[in-house]
Amino acid sequence: MGSVLYDYLNESCFFDENLIASNFSPLTEKQLRKELQKYREFCLNNLDDVYGEIPKDEKKLRVFSGRAGLSIEELKRSALYVEQQIIDDPLFEVTREQDPNREAFSASLGYSSTNLDRKKILEAIRYLKKMTPMVATNYVKLLPISKIYEPPKEIGLNYSKNYFSDFLPEPVLKYFHNRANVRSLFRAGDKWAVAKGLSPCRGIFIDFKEHLGSSGFIYYLQQFQPTEFDKTTGRLEFEITLPEDSPDQKHFEAWVYQSINQSANSFYKNCLSEYAISQECNSSFLTRSQFIYDLFQLLGMSESGIKSHTTSSLFNIDLPFIDQIDIDLLFRIRQEDGEAFQNFRDNLERGFRELRLEKDPQILQLKTENLIHELTEVQVREIDRKMKSLKKIAGSEIVIAAFGLAGAVHTGGCCYCHFSGI
Image 1 (cartoon, rainbow, N blue to C red):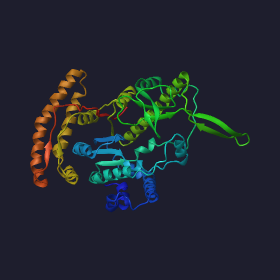
Image 2 (cartoon, rainbow, N blue to C red):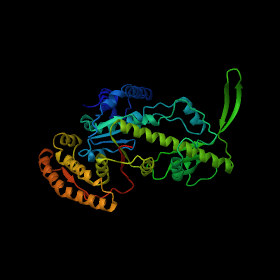
Image 3 (tube, rainbow, N blue to C red):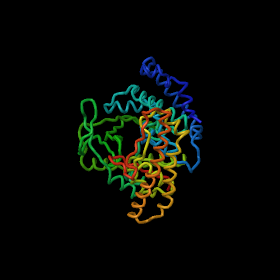
Image 4 (cartoon, one colour):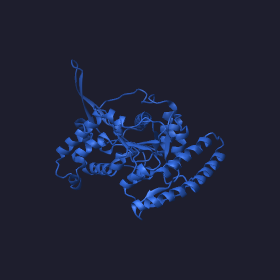
C-alpha cells in the first residue's frame, strides 16, 4: 500500500539526497520554512487518507507507541513479531511555526528567539529515510501525534478561585501531587537552569517521578500591572514584569500548588488523547513510562484479552531477532519468509488463551515460564532451520541473536507496558 506521506516526501526537497548531504545549505531559512509549512498543510489536509491506511482488522497485532519514540533498531527487532507499528511523525513536529506573540513573551523572560533547528530537521529526515522499507511494506505508519501537544494559537489568561483543583477527579489529582517533582529555576548567565531543590523564587520546573524523558512544565510568577483601560471598547493594556525579589512563602506555596494542578491537567489530557488515537487505530498502547502505566491502572485501563497478553509478552521478554541484516532484506524476509517468527507469536497467543484464566500469581508465573521454555525448545530450532535458508540469500554475515527466551523481563529503566481497552 505504501504511504501518502511518503509519496509527498519522495517528490519534495526533503528526500533529495544532494540536499540532505549538504545539510540543506542551498536553501535559505525562509525557503526551508516554506517547505515545512507545505508539508504541514499536506499532513493536515490529508488526515483522513493517512488514518485510512491503517487497517481496522482487530485480530492483527498492532502497536501504538505514540511519542515514546522507537529507534530504527527497535523497529527492526520487533518487525518479525508485530504486524504494524504506529509512531509519531518526527518531521511534522518541527513544522510548527512560532507565534510572534509567544516569541515576544519568551523574550521578556530572557529567552532569545530561536532560528530554525536544521539539526533536528535532518535527524527527522534521516530517520524517515532509513525506515522507507518499513513504510513501503505497511509495517510502520506515521501520524502527526505531536499536534495534540501544540499550545493554542492565542496566549490566554486563566483564573480559578480554587487553583484549578477541580479539573481532575480527586484520586487522580492526588496521584499527580504524590509524584510531582518541583524544583526552582535560577538565572545562569543569559539562560535559566534547574536547581536541585525548591525554595521561594519566580520560576519553577515540574516533572513527575518515574516518567522517562526530559520533558516537564515551566512556570514563572510574573507581575501584571494595568497601564490603560478603555471603558468604551473594554480594551485593557497592562505591563508584565518578572520582579527580582522572591514572593512570600504563603504566596509561593499557593502558586506551586496551582502549577502542579495545571501540569496534571495538561499531562492527563495529553495521555488520554494519545490513548484515544490508539483506540481509533485498533492498536495496543505502548509506553515506557512507569508513571503513565500506573496512572492508567488507577483509571481502570488495564490490559485484557489474548492479544493484550501476547503484546505484554512480546515487549517484556527477550526474543530472538535477526541481527546484522540490511533493512531491505529484513522486510523481504518479513514479506516472504517470516513464518517461523510469526509461529512463535501465534503459539504464544494460544498458550496465553489458557493461562489468562489462572488467578494465582505464583502458579501463573510458573506456567508462563514453562510455556515460554517449551516454545523456546521448539521455535528456536525452527528459526535456526530458517536461518540456514536465509544465509543462502543474505550471505554468511546474517546471524540470529537469541537472548533469554525463558522469560526474562527487560530491566534498566525501560518498562514496556500496554493497554488495549478500558
